[in-house]
Image (spheres, rainbow, N blue to C red):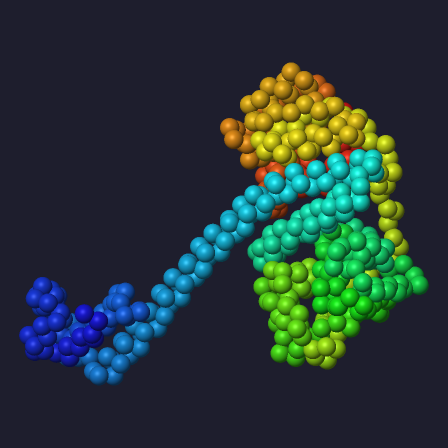
Length: 458
């Protein structure tokens, strides 16, 4: 009933009716001379009990023993509650991660079709009128922005679980920052802002993941643009600081209030700067901090308050040999080898847009909308490269690649997983299943061209 029962001696057994007749009989048969039963109460419910008994006729529990038992029950209840909270939190986190991964997949499929269509439009002769050109630019910019938002959402989940890895190569930091500045200058929001860049006199080389470092400075630059009114100034400086490279992004925009500064890098924070609402998902600066730390660097923010602007400083350790690696040749600078390419995808828009894009480049294309027909087309048509979606309606892409491998086609085709599932474990599973390459939708056309130009694709 949720009340402590304290029987200091056998005589008290007959007087305590709350424990029930059967309980009293059991205590008598066991020969208890003294007995304590304390409930473990949690949220107005009894989760269990702690019982203590003595069978030595010369000893009996005291009031002090009862107090000790009640304290033990309280502590044990806290342990049980914490364990339950941990299990609930773990299950909720797992459900959230599964949802985010599935969300990323579902978003990337239509995004892939849009991105492919925009790329095809960009390759068309410039015979459209001004309105069409403007709409084409809007599509391109917004598709790029949506793609970055989806990646940011998934990256937060990966970093939180410690499942993000870095593909480090020597990088010329100044050149990378230059590219980022040029890219953000093409966005809608950058119009009317004065964006100045100062570079160090010497090359500053870092060992870093190129895509992740671009992510850091893209977020800082778009953040500065967001909170700087047209006519305002944004200054970017790249310099050496001891054994590190220092990149600062300074604006004279809305500024940051003192109370918002401590939480500025926390995920999902939506701080207001002056009269400007942050908008977005509150992930950009959180990713900046976490990706910078993964590279062994630091990030700091400075502001004197609303209306005074802000400055973000990122330091990244320099490579021991501070010389830039040879830049890989761009896919645009090489003639892309013409391939026989089979596309297996059940999304009609993604299938048609990718087919149009690759045909425009000059490849010979065949298509299949499900796994079984994909295997049959591979057997009959013998492609040099097969781009295979994972989430197919009949058999999944893993089964498709296994069956294609079993055909023992000569020459051996290059099998590429082209999917909306982009977690590191998805890539590992794809390679273990027999794929040669794993690409995440929407695929970057330059990356796809590099793969199609690979000498192993024959």
